[in-house]
Image 1 (tube, each protein chain N blue to C red):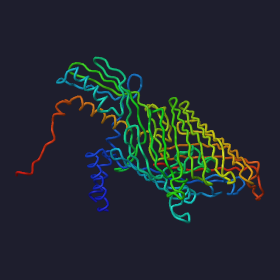
Image 2 (image 1 turned 90 degrees about the vertical axis):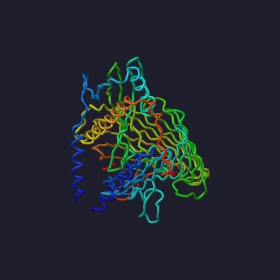
Image 3 (image 1 turned 120 degrees about the horizontal axis):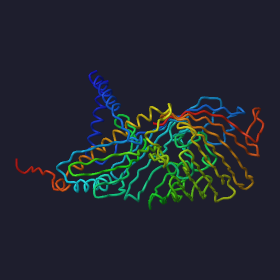
Image 4 (image 1 turned 180 degrees about the vertical axis):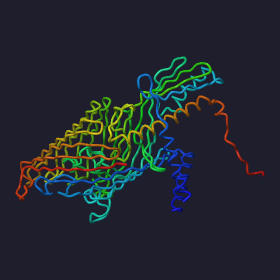
Length: 192
Length: 341
């Protein structure tokens, strides 16, 4: 009974949390995930190097660098959206986006916009693959028949983009050199 | 109840822990359920000359299909089983005699040696043709003559090399069509060239030589689809099958065109126009079918309603009128509901 109560409370908490989070819109009426980050300890050049490494190394499977200047990085990328049932699920589609990073001394900003959804469908071999190459803008208001499914897609996309943003901020705050030097702790059982 | 919940939590914790420690992807679970009503205009179920949607004036079952997939590092597997008429007695082969068992849709393992090169072994949906057994993979609910008379599945081992996103090549060794274990040994070779000349257009040129329906034969197949605009998609399937022994019936040739247009976000209309010909074999003369199928897909979340009208013609009169007399035309209306999860 305690477990049941816990599940109900947890489920409602997750649902409320998911409902509260949604994309803002930019000047053109497009969804945007926009962050300005204070970064006094890291120089502008280092931030730029780390942003390039994030695109070309950490997220190289899902991002492609478009252009780089002395203070910005532009890239395109995709995020796979999952349909989850408890602990198991399957990909339900992907969202492509444009990524912009700009650095100044002491701070940087980044945003994701131009988000297009491409649904997945299971192919003859049981793999989930895109049904089309032409994406649907996430801002589009669906008909009544698909309103619920679209809301799930928006929620799932927001959570994935938010995680992407957290990963990016952590990556830019971390020195790769220091991380590489950090060795795995060795435990000796010879003496105790 | 407590035990069940404890087990669920334990399973969830284990999966999360594993996910943190390895590159294992979560277990994917997916599938579908479908059911249909069909009304034959001549009230004769024998007028259905292609696979599935066989019953007349009946709310009938398609199948429940359940697929599992998991990837660990470079290795993955897919296991997919179906239960119900579409996945049992109407699919080939039935896993046990009598039409009361199940059908294996896919059961294979795959290993990606590199990003470009992978090998797959097991029992797989066929690489030949446009349509598949699962209603989720088709736009029309009824099936084409090309689908019905071609292979449904192939057991074998195949290697795929991806030259780029626009070109890939597959080659493999296979058993005869639609069998879990070979009756004539590993006796067929097959290949597939995939080209994607422009964004949204993909074409597959397929060939399968060796043991198949009616003995040994060669099937050559072109399957292609082009998403021309956001709303308009055009598909084409053309195939030719020649049985080595020309006295054995079953050789065929045909083509089907699949234009589809999205009239609303949730509603797409599609037409299937098909010409299909059984070739003459010994004393058996050639005979040709033409069929036109008008289908709508109305989607609401995971559910798709598929109303469909189908008209078939063959001047050799293989169809039946209401009284049982031979007729050159057959027609049917069906309404299917397919839920994919």
